[in-house]
Image (cartoon, rainbow, N blue to C red; front, top):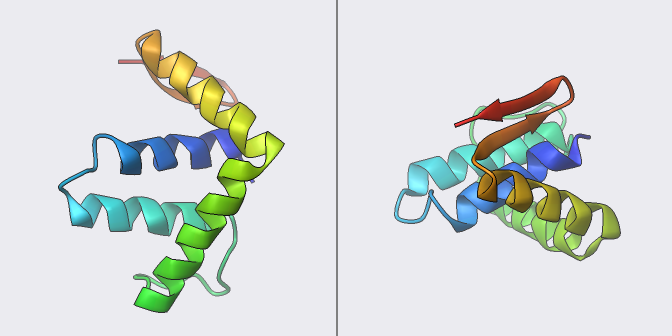
Length: 92
């Protein structure tokens, strides 16, 4: 599980995706897929599965790994970078 990828989508949900329910659902699905929450991964999430992803997000936010990843992504965004990858950083 790449905690930075998950943190990036959490921050997207809380920021630029506001007012765009389809984008929020897409990020929820990406988080679920990346965290291996469901096997097999469905093409779309049921309301119950969405709730499970929200619960995962709360747990992630309260974990030391999640907090560190969120800080790392916030710093990258503030510096003009959109995404952090294992192979490098992509500037916006």
